[in-house]
Image 1 (cartoon, rainbow, N blue to C red):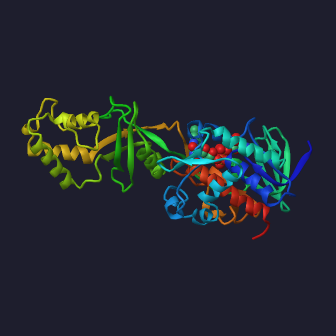
Image 2: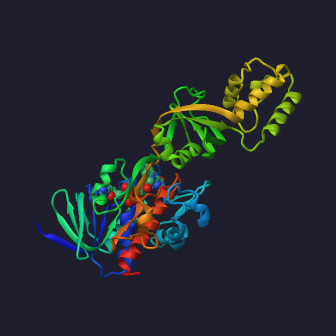
Image 3: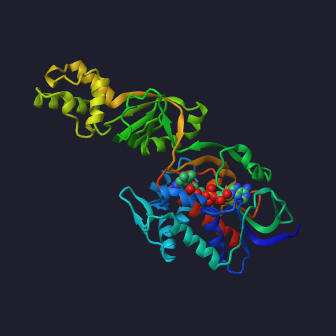
Length: 412
Ligand SMILES: Cc1cc2nc3c(=O)[nH]c(=O)nc-3n(C[C@H](O)[C@H](O)[C@H](O)COP(=O)(O)OP(=O)(O)OC[C@H]3O[C@@H](n4cnc5c(N)ncnc54)[C@H](O)[C@@H]3O)c2cc1C
């Protein structure tokens, strides 16, 4: 079978691979650039991302603040994000006619609310630069001799190139990284990130859809905690506070096989004394009213009722009958409720892998392997993952751009 040669080959037709290939041609139109894609379609994750709307990035121009949203990569991404940040992403898409909008929580989507807009934009660029995409090219082997990479696909097609950008995304099995590990690249074992918690005996089991707007959730016996909306689900708990906590503690939770306990503070903005005083004030002004009918402002009446039940305050109890001890128990439940978690469930909105190419071997100014010159990486194949909200795509754009600068721009 003939071998086809390119100046630059990108393995993987996802967000990072497409962006890297486009940027290579943008930097040097004379380069022969080709994309090898395992399946018979490209940009599959872009299509389903953000519930079909594609959460392209997050409006957070301050790099220091942005970095805090990457449980893996927080320290290392400082220089890459200084080089190509959120404003560059917005500017790039707008220069291609794709207007982005900011939602109240900072997430950015195309104004069309359709991921197809992003796909069309990337496909247009690929076609403008006449970048070929080779489908059904499942790369199984990479070797390097005399500064040329030789790439072999499962169907025995072979390609050679001078510069190689690997952008195959993350895998959930360590063995899926073999094709790259065999070149001498070190891989951090993959474990899932961004998942919901399964709670068999949840005290809120029958209240799916309820939200504690500003919960502080801490993993018991650790300092790992996260604050934000907590969503009660049929299976347990989800929402931003839980998903972000799952990402932060991805490896530790994997190691305990997802059996652990969390402590939930439903009112973290109040010190315990202030909360106690607030409850005494409510008691004084509502002495004849039922406790369950006079919820504290921050909680819905369904949740308030449940907290009352958990504190042994019955639906018939009026404030007058509530003792000091009852108020102490209520405070404790509201701010220190311990719940046992016994599993994880996939987050349907977005899931990513924690693990991948070890960042220690990568020159992050170029996304290039330190010991294997001209081998570059982009996207989720690296040991970088962000929390939900557009951070994973931002890393795909940033690393794709930087890998392209390294591959198309020549030596350091
Ligand atoms: C349901 C869902 C929704 C998401 N929503 C969002 C969101 O709204 N915002 C956000 O920031 N992030 C989101 N993410 C995460 C985001 O999609 C990924 O982080 C991002 O797509 C990673 O891009 P990538 O190019 O590195 O990898 P991928 O998108 O996974 O692309 C890799 C490509 O490489 C190909 N490939 C793999 N192995 C080989 C091989 N051996 N040879 C050749 N080709 C190969 C694959 O077929 C694939 O096409 C979501 C993820 C999921 C699963």
